[in-house]
Image (cartoon, rainbow, N blue to C red; front, side):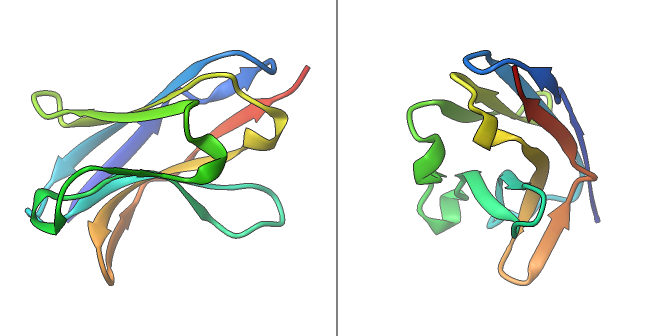
Length: 118
């Protein structure tokens, strides 16, 4: 079983930057993808950024809305996944969830609120 703990959310102004962290513990499979999703009020949860497992080809995948502004990374020594968010916009306001899994096997964190408002 995998445990995920997000941190780093908050209230920021448009144009600001923010970094989210996700501490990962438990058993990780070699074919697990790791990443971030978000859910805004009244909307479905959507992919933000994903680190694709090496067994699935590796690399990263970003939603079009965040390309060039957000960067996903991970520190294997700290078992932590990060999401660096820059040039934040009001439409980035959402609860951000950390994700680890593949296919039907899915693990989610409790979410962290990011609010972008002037």
